[in-house]
Image (cartoon, rainbow, N blue to C red; front, top):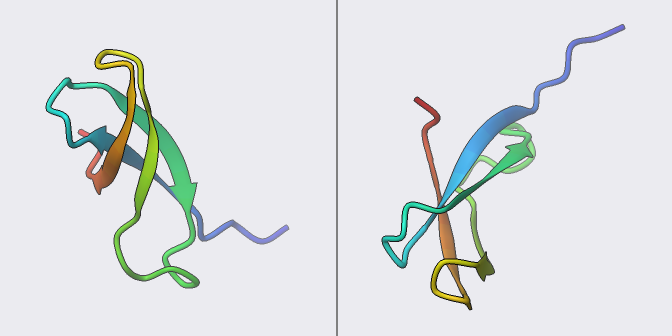
Length: 55
């Protein structure tokens, strides 16, 4: 079986709460950094999450 090209990325909240989601993305199909609106339970709102590196 072939190895997948998907890599795991950390989606960090732009509300500066420190909350994050972990997602997978394929850099061949989606070369730009991911941004998506998701729910942040700390501020209890939907906010923008941006991709950052996993340390």
